Image (cartoon, rainbow, N blue to C red; front, side):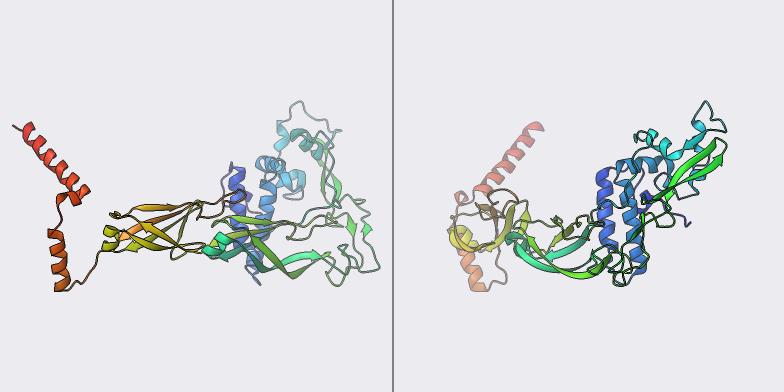
Length: 395
């Protein structure tokens, strides 16, 4: 059997990682190596399967506990030679077992991990939900603000129409496996230093499925599922933010044995806008104004996500002043109301003045008094006081 990589290593994690860290690592790698994003790439497909296998174990508390204690053999009895794969790890059980004792490894696992001895095995023919599909959707800033319906095309597993998911050719049915009697597992006995030890392994005859397909369906080659291109409409709500994920229920891969479909997870990427910037549910923008507009006041045309509006700035507007337009921001997700729009004014200093313009500006400056400059006057008053205090301290 090929050597498996450590599941923590597969997801790029350290042992002891939190559930949230496992979930984030899985989503990132599943997106990177998903077959839809890597068509005709066997290496990516193999890594995708390995990632899913690691996540299946580490996201399940009971499986993870067994894996942390016994490694791959704890979650896959067929790995590493069954009971021998533990390398004498049961030597810690004191008191000894006589050579006549028959020891069931499955019962030992159940007693250690809360199964209660002879716990019920998983039914290979029970309905199982299909796996999720992850895709990315790139939208504009305005589309994120307003919401949109967008049609995407995905590859997904669907139930075979010819065999209706059974995997058997039309007119035939799968047979119950005579070796495992439909359980998908067989009990194997092995003599050891403790006596006869027994363990359960996937049935080699049916591959752990519990049924044998004598005449496979030619459409799906006995898999019961086929890959199809499917168009799905994604309804993106107004107010969605960059990096958020939409879950479209029931649009993932089909389940097995009549189980429900998985989900379609759509990660949203919002392109930057040349005018607006988002901060929470507020929208920010900067508007350049002239020196005269700042001094005399003016009515400005302000762009918003709803269109242009008029706003009057007062006389003496200072650089960097921020005005608030209430209710002109982004719709709050799953709540009533909207954020605000914040407008910061930037005074543009004119360049490349001719002599007439410079003379006019100098004449204008001569007509001004210190009372026209509140901040400037206050600043120089502070400097003067600082100098006076400095002189007193050194006298």
